[in-house]
Amino acid sequence: MTNRQVRVTELPKGTLKQDNFELTEADMPAVQDGQVLVKTTLISIDAAMRAWMQGATYRAPVKPGDAMPCYAISEVVDGNGTKFQSGDLVAGESVWADYAALPARGLMKLPKVEPLSHLMSVYGIAGKTAFHGLVNVGRVIAGETVLVSAAAGSVGGFVGQIAKAFGCRVVGIAGGPEKCAWVTEELGFDACVDYRDPGMFKALRAACPDGVDVYFDNVGGQVLETALFVMNERGRVVCCGAVSQYDTDAATGPRNLPGLVVVKRLRMEGFIVMDFVREDAAALRALQTWVASGQIKVTEDIVEGLENAPAALIGLLAGENKGKRMVRVAADPS
Ligand SMILES: NC(=O)c1ccc[n+]([C@@H]2O[C@H](COP(=O)([O-])OP(=O)(O)OC[C@H]3O[C@@H](n4cnc5c(N)ncnc54)[C@H](OP(=O)(O)O)[C@@H]3O)[C@@H](O)[C@H]2O)c1
Image 1 (tube, rainbow, N blue to C red):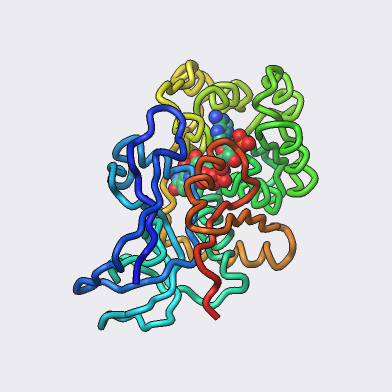
Image 2: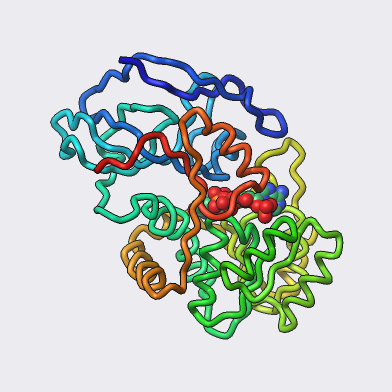
């Protein structure tokens, strides 16, 4: 039996391209002590994967020849004497492949949820990142104005909807008029500003007449620079990611740091979702309540087929997606 894998041929210089990857056929993985054999069901496509190709981040960098690392939901095929049984559904670090041998200690057994994909979107890293960033880092309060970038993406879309559920005025930033209209009409944001429009600063001012109390930054760069100008005194800037800086070899940082942070007495704080693992249960309870009440709409963008994983990541970085992008490698186990 063979196993399809997508490997990194060469690290990207500038924009990620299809030929940075190759689809290969490998032998079935050999399972070592402490490992389980899994069959991949869903692969998460994350902007951060491009940052992993730039060097060390919160995880080891990707190297040429590696099967592309990812977060995945998989079905256990062989528990190999560990605590997992065949048929268990698990989530954890994996690779772009049909099958993988993974350390049992890195895997989490999943509950039965319908649809399974919600464990990768609203009840997965995206939903938890949005909740922890807004609540535990941004310390949002009802009545405040919350601004969020990459607002039509998976984390950003949840941030805005959670902030609405808290009773905030919510303004998004997204690429293009069609996405901005979708963010207000479908996700219920109060306004959304197109960062590709040269009049972005004026539009932001008009959309935030009382200034911004919490800016949830997913993009960094020039958008962050512009957002700092509309922050209120004592505002909080939640640094979640910097997608505008990942897919390029010419990074551009904001020029108004630390000046505006000083003058406006801002608190700017970065975080990684795992920092708040002890608060995950509270986050999941709140997210379930909002999904059940219809205050959070779950948008999923599922690309079919392992062979399409490179195009799915390239497309996400180009802004193709609305909501949580993932790749279906195999049908949900029944
Ligand atoms: N701190 C954490 O623990 C944590 C966890 C998960 C994710 N994150 C971060 O959250 C952010 C969103 O990640 P995601 O995986 O959920 O992806 P996503 O938001 O679903 O998709 C990425 C979006 O970024 C936007 N984008 C691409 N290039 C841009 C640019 N130059 N300027 C502005 N926007 C740009 C695109 O939308 P447009 O069409 O609007 O351009 C695209 O749809 C990333 O920064 C990621 O690193 C952080």
